[in-house]
Amino acid sequence: NKGALVNLFEAVKMIEDKTGHFWLFGDDDKINKGSIERIFYEINENEIDILLMNRIICDINLNPIRNDSYFKDKKDVQFIIRNDEDYIKYLKSIKTLDGLMCFISSIIGGPNLLNFIIQELEQDNFYKQNLFPHTSFIHKYIRQNANVRIHYLSKPLIYWRGDNTSKDGRTMKINSMMNYEEQIQIAIKVIKNRNVLKEYLNVIKNSYHIGRHLYYTIGSDKDEIEYNRYIVFLLRFNIFFAYYLSLLEIVIVVYKYIKMSLLYFTGHPKKS
Image (cartoon, rainbow, N blue to C red; front, top):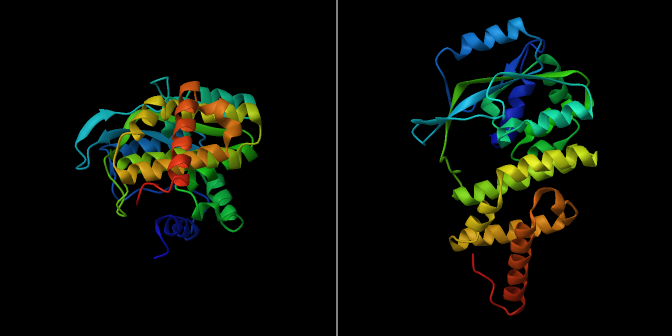
């Protein structure tokens, strides 16, 4: 056992038929009735590089709460990404973070993406350092290839288990902050064009808005310690503040940083 992420991509390397589509499915999620038939129909009838499927948000016991919607248009959508303009159009249409292809169980990739990932695994160890290596690989593939076809199915085909905190004891607040941080890292690593980067960061910003920053300031000591570490991360990339933080958010971040500094220099930092 090399850890969940490494194990995941070790499994990718083991795929024998590299001419077909592949699906990495989380063991805590569930396939909706009729999904397999719909997936095979879409793959056989359409030229698809990436098939992205909507999901049903559930509680920890997989009891349905509501249908999700990754894009502003609630219908099936197909994107053909040939250039920056097409990519920006795709980013502008995203409603939730999973439109960036974060939820691995809702993604099916074609053979070109599969072989690209296998090649990248030999050259780039980023997948061992990020919580969303599949997202990084997918967007790197999109950025380096022409005429990438993304097909989104609005009908929820997957049950997503919510409120599923990690086994190492992290709280939901900490998990959410880590997701934000990891997505920013992917954007900075993969996207070099500043206009495109701005739109990518806007998707993140819209998912992690001011309300979450206020929410994180009220919590347990463990949450606050992690939030303070996260603030330091944001300050490292302060050049991007204008892209993904509002003025009020910047004020909160700076206030937290000053508070951290005062606690440190007065010798009274929060204890872990």
